[in-house]
Length: 193
Image (cartoon, helix red, strand yellow):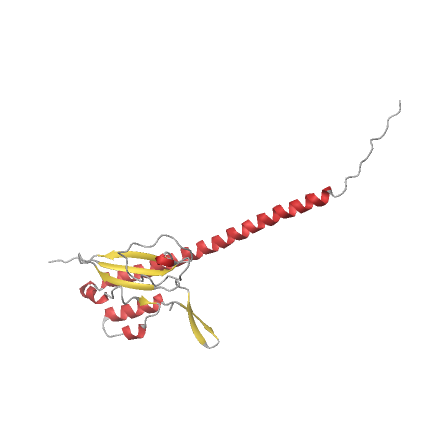
């Protein structure tokens, strides 16, 4: 009995198609990873800004509580927010409350970290467009609020939080305060008799 060797058929181009399909799958995977990386960077920056806002919020609440006898002097109102766009040098004065407000204003503008670029001092290391307000509520509590620009639109803050309202609309994705981020705390000053 004669055993014949199997006939080898040549398959041409099959490996090229397999390689192309593999490259397409890898390309989609890399694009997905790049998109995930971008979203992680945005989330990381949002978290950084929130932590900065909470530190500045706590700082002003502590200053008001420490200087409770003059707490009313800290009220800036929502229409004259401190920080981005404000002239912090006009706030400096002789009272402790004036100095605290001037310090808080410059910290909201990014006084903590500065860099010199081309001879000009640039402030960085704080939230984008940070503003702060101290308001007196109807029940005598002090409402301290820090607002800043977020990167992606989410739900707008409640209408009762007027600090920085309509300051963060860019006309398209961030319309109607969808990119305004807020952090608020209440400072209660006891009246002891």
